[in-house]
Length: 322
Image 1 (cartoon, rainbow, N blue to C red):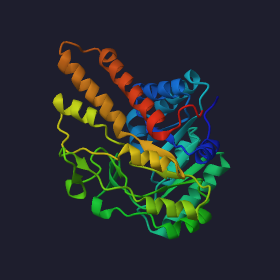
Image 2: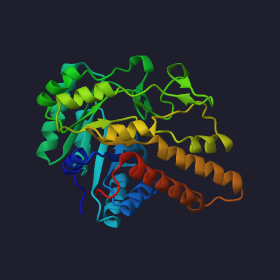
Image 3: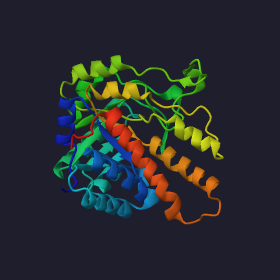
Image 4: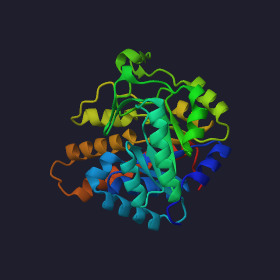
């Protein structure tokens, strides 16, 4: 099937009590690992591209790689989504390039300005058959060009969501309930340590989520900054020359709980990057004589695939839902 929008995908997810995985992509191996897992688990998927990924890989190459995935996986629905578009011009460019979904992120701007720019994007997108994700509330952390200090983050105000959605016409809404961008999502001061000395992040604000859900019945909610930062890959990185102290993510049981509610899309990126980086570091430590990218990228791609498979089955609950 051709690329699709997320409209029907989110309706099924909302009614079925699961979430669709939105995975950030920037090269062939990551796209292959994601879509092969989704094809085998018969799961819908959102492949999302950040502004930084478009600059790194070239906008044409990325679209063509996703088109190749559509050809190789004809039986699963695939959305091509812009992640964290920061201007109307960026969103327009992606719509014109064939994206089926875009995010306009003006969450750092005043409420009225956020509404005005989001509405502008919605009008252009809907005229071209494309859906729009918007954001209220500000997540901490770093993801490509999105950089927000912990003290500058703000939870979504549930009392604003109805007016925002009504006035913008957006198709889904990303909210801030305590998730955070990047592999270093929380400072040590924000966390506690368990009996094993491992950092435990503060719990997500499900009260904010459920209040937004109550005010927007049937409306799809999105969570950004929701990588769980698998500790086996943090360990693999550190044991093979890396330095990633205190990298900690969102507990998977909390993400599964969110997926049972109005959350229809959960963004995951750092987990895949960790799997790739850890595997490559380990490969070179074990095979210092090797130099062929096909040799070290093959196991990296295989581990990305297994991380995605685990997310589909055990966290998102979307396996078998394509």
